Length: 154
Length: 241
Image (cartoon, rainbow over all chains, first blue to last red; front, side, top):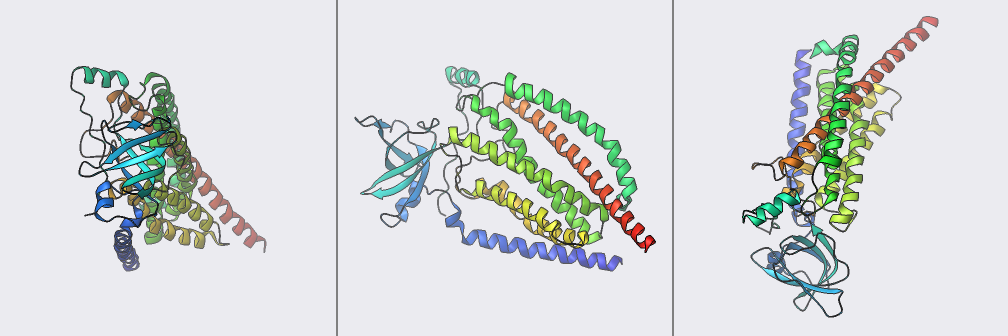
């Protein structure tokens, strides 16, 4: 009886080991399609075919946001601190869209400019009350963890 | 472990523990909700919307915890033929499924104002949706057989195999570029969340974990009594024949 239990335990352990290995291999193989967006560096090194729609993600570069005369078209640069790409978008930006914060845009590259159809804001993992943030800023001590940078291809 | 294989003894333990879980649930949720919805501050980026976190994050933890409870119970049931463990797994499934639905619903309500989308197919959101389908699949499979023991065995295997999804949910935000932000609390550095928001979150977490325990005890008791009734019915039928 005890032997049968040990056999079942062994079978379960081996099964899980095999399953775990298979999962790791599959996830590694599909790594490129499991990412939600691509970093600017990846887009520069391996440019997607023209007219192909994809998502570009990173941080909105500080001081890069400019509004066109029509009032609804916005231009900004998305950066992963190594490379940055210009983005043009016509429409309503999400509330959290601001310089230095994460952003994910969906669209196509046209003549070196990413024409975005959709822009999503990416929130970082820092939470704090407004008063604390203001007090830290006033004291020059405002150093939240920088928003996570997008992963680039190894 | 085999001390708890006796259903009558398990029933006694469940009845003794149950009132405590109810007490902690009532206390934790009443303090937690006041802290989370009224006394905690608004976030410097997200404003009042951040209050969704106090329900969303514990629900997500419980969705993963519930599945792990189910998978471990199923493994014990399969390897040691433990009769109560299978019932414990069955009892955990709808509760974990409920928390998964709460997590997805509050996440959508949070994503719309913050990200600008109710739903995106990024690795975190998609893997949580898969978790929901695993829960539903488990419950469907467990009740799909005339003989509840065969159903329990098949569903138990599904629960164990499906557990590979749990680390995928947890680490999806670190392995791949996702729209969902990385972890604020379970990381190597100090939590990236201010103490005035961390305490409400932890209180809500205690309350909701106690709620999970309390519902689990209730459902386990129901499963034990139902199984006993079935045995008695069979015995009566055989006696009459």
